Every structure is written in C-alpha cells, then in structure tokens.
Length: 567
Image (cartoon, rainbow, N blue to C red):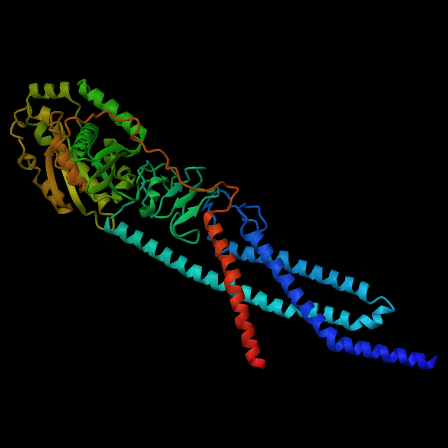
C-alpha cells in the first residue's frame, strides 16, 4: 500500500507539473484575453447605447434647464454633459465587470476545486483566476486611453468653440459700432439704454437675457423647449421678439439690426407737437415708399393712433391734447435700400417741459443726438404784442395757443442736456415754427416765407438762435402748417434721423396702415423637448468616434511605450 501511495503521489506531481507547464499559461492567457475582451465589449456596448440615445431620459439623462432667468437654455455639451456621459459609462461598466469577475471566480472554484479532482485541476483554476485578475491591468490601460481620448476630443472641441465665440462676438460688436447701433427703451418711466435685450422664444415664450455667443452656445442657444435660437444679429436674432431688460416691456422688431434714433419733440403746451408728428409720419411713409422702402409701425397701438389722427385732420378737426403722463414713443420702422432706422418719436405733453423737475423725468433726452425744438409763434411775446384785435380773434377761432414762452422752454431743456457726459451737444436740431398756415394770415407773419430763421431773428430771437446753433453741429429751420408740403417735411425729418430721404413720394402709396405691418414670431427650428439638442447629439457622436478610433490608437501607443521600457 505505501508503494501505491508513492506512485499516486508521483503521478499527481507529474500531472500538476505538466499542467503548470502546458495548461496554466494557456489558461492564464485565455482568461486574460477573455476578461479584457469582455470588459472592452461591455464598455463599447454601453457607449453605443448611451451615446446614440436621443431622449433626454436615456442611459445618461440630459437635465432640462430650469425655467426663468437668467437663461433657460442648455449649456454647451463639452462643458457639462460630456463629463456626465463619461461618468455614466463608468457607472454602467465597472460594477458590471466586478460582478462578472466575482461570478466567474465563484463558478470556477465551485466547479474545478471540488475534491478529489480539485487536487489535479488546481493549476487550471489558478491560471484562469490569475488571468481574470490580471486582466485589470490592460483594462486600466484602456480606461486611461479612453480618458485621454475624451480629453483630447473635448480640448479640441473647446478650442474650436472658443474661437467661434470670440470671432462671432467680436464681429457683432464691430458691426454694431460701425453702424452706431443704439439700443434704448421707448416706454414711459424707463427710457433706459442697454447692451442686449431680452429675447422671447417663439415656441414657449421663455425669456433669454444672455442670447449671445457664450457658454450656452456659439451659433445657437437651445431653449428648454428644444427651439434653437440664433445668438447674433447677423445670424437672425433680430427676428425674435425683444423686450427691455429693465422694464420687461416689448421692444420694436428688428431692434439691434437697425439703429434706434430717438427724435424728441420739445415745446410748450399746445405748441402743435402732436399734429407735426403725425404729419411728419405721413410724409415719411410716403417718401419711404417712393424710395423703394417702407415705413411700418412698431406697435398696433401706434398704427391705430395714426389712423385716427389723420382721419381727424383730414376732416379739419383738432387733435386731442396730449395727456400729462410720461410719453411712450411712437415707433416707426424705416427701411430704405441704403439705410435702416427705428425712429422713436417722443411727443410729451408740453406741461412736462414747464418745470425743471419734470424735464428731469424725460430720460430719453440722454440718448439721442437729434431733437426737434417746436416753437408756437403765437406764444412769442414779441408777436402777440404785434397782433391786431381781429388777428387775435382769428387765432383764437382757428387754433389753440401755448402760454409758455419758447425761450423759457429752451433754457430748461439746455439745463437738462448739460447734465449729460457730452454737455448736451447734439448733432442735429430742427427748429420748427408751427401753425404757419394761420401765421401767414397775419400781418407780422406774412413775410415768413421759406426763411424761418430770418423771420425769428427779425422778431428779436437772435439770442435763442445763437444758443441753439452753439448746442448743435447743424441746425435747420422750418415753418410747418397743415398745408406744408409732405416732401419738405419728409426731407427735414429724414435729415434729423440721418436718412437719405429726398421727399419724393410714391403716388400709388396707400397710407392706411396694413394689418400685416407687425411681424409675426419667427418660426425657429428645433427638436421636441423630449429629445436631446442637435449639439448634444453631435457631441456624443464625436465622443463615440474618439473612443472608437482614438482610444485604441492611444492604447497601442501606451502598450508600445511600456514594452520598449521593460524590454
């Protein structure tokens, strides 16, 4: 019996030795390759499912932006979501690999190490378990390679994105500076200047206060509803509904693309400012049509007020007195073949110019470079003293007159303008003598003619004239009445707004405001809110391509470097 035991021991030792020489290396290599291959296969399977998912609630959820300020838009993919996707790949791969390794080790132990065959199959078991354990090393190299591939892809993408953001932002700033684009609010009690309006999403009406090339996107921002919104004026941002960032009220269409030109009417009560404004609007609309352009209203209320005022004037009636509240600008969108302007026509009640504290509330005077100083000739003490009794009766029967001396109005205006940084300097001032049709029927006004400046100087207003001409680079004088030629009015207001209008009207122009003058919301492109944005999908495709192509290449390079070091 001892001999048998000895022979069995010798056979067992020989078998184990043979397994260690021939079986163990093969089992080790197969287990190493199998562990590495299964881990790699799991990673790419998870990557495919995660990075090709189109729903926001996929394997790696894409968080929808919260509604409300400052911006409910998705951040750029490479800034946030790419790292969430990589974390999701790790969470769905590493625990699975650990679980499978534990299951494999337990199954091999239970199957191969049962006595008595376990004594003979120990080398096979050891080779398989050791191979699985050491497959962690190439998998760690793969993790490093995939991390480097992701970093390279993200760095390259961020460089390109940063260049696009810088170039687009610079181009827009240069373009706006070249065209001297002014952005200001036309609404009463606000009148603030600002650098960027709030823009409304045409799909969900969500407000976006930072719609410009930034961390939320270079060319487009993606609203939480999925709509893709252009980030610059040159890309079409001006087609979106715009709102004042201070008072949050609606701004005219195309703001930011066309220069806003405030044209305030300055004059005493009942000086004829409102009549002058509506006559000028009619002349501008006809003249723009004659120049192959258009002049449309920015708000429906402006179109209704204009239609009502012109109907009243055409019947020979008088316009109602302007209320004492702060004025809301009449917005006229003027488009010519060679120039664009959005005119803010401010027609305040004359009472707002009769006190210093009231004038201070007219903050729109801080923004413009042109104004219209409206003089009621019948408010001039020099003229009133020269009128006969019959002429005074004629004036009372035909028109309302102002009790405010234009010189006093001018002094309060100049005091307010001097508080500006430029000391109140204006580029252009138009001095308009109103009610000229009635004035010419008096003896003192019979010589008015076309030389309004000379006529005013003849009345003793030389100091007022010189003050105005020191305040502005250019001053023009005009006598306006209900019978004033529209061409002359259009030329004057075009000059004040810096527009090349020659006053020629289109004879076929229909002056009635059209129902379609207000622009409809721009139908923007985009995806449903349940799908990830196109930018995220493109980023995920780029990430998958980097993991598939760049990852293995980096693994090979790392392997070669390790081999060369330890060879």
